[in-house]
Length: 369
Image (cartoon, rainbow, N blue to C red; front, side, top):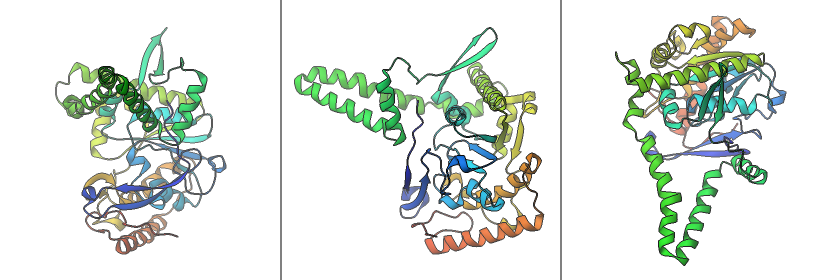
């Protein structure tokens, strides 16, 4: 299943109800590979790449390009190393599939999986991979990859995927067919609608409004988790280990980033003693940097990191990757960078209608460099 790629740039429209101000227009740039890269350089021109994989926290889709965590880290280092492969969607399975899509295209030194507290819930909701064991070896199959399709049809789906319109086109196709059938026979038209439209829609709604799915993390953290929950945890563990093994087989290092206290507790519960096999970077272990004290990492009405939340992660990432060959910077150098970027962000809020404290909002109109 193609995860959908887009050429060029576009604007992200956010509803007023979500942030409490008028609809915002935030410039977002994807390169020809479908990666959030506004540097003007091809991915193949980057060296010593650190690939960031994850969901909406990683993609930072609601933020101006220059304030994403990867852009800020590259600016701090003064070189293009961090690449944002995040997808505004769902957790570990899509992140793994995203890496599979790029592993033979882009040479990476490091893969950083940004673990989010809802990744276990997303695994239950999506269930993207089928796992089978043969002679002690675990194999996985993307259940949406159907090799029985004619090659021309597969090529057509991939083309649609590049423009992120696959489902739009297919839905239009089925609705058109349904109207044609109904014109000849109302009874057949109703059957067609029930078969191709209503059933799929209702199944989707049931899956994503499942009370068990919404409480699966709480169940896991309870004294007596359900056996079903433990089975999903085991699948998470297997997929994570498969991903790590395949990354390292390519000569690349594998890391897990922990967003906060909730993620730390959940990951420890899921992995148990096996967590020692992974290299972890904890974004919030040292609290808010002194230069950013008094500001919130999060949007006012949204749990995602805002511009200042991304900025707060830069010293943590910079220090962590020193152990893997990155240049070391003094506390004064890091503090100077934070203060300079904070001043720029506050001016950005002031010019475009944000709230610098306690939680800034997005700009109504993106500034231009």
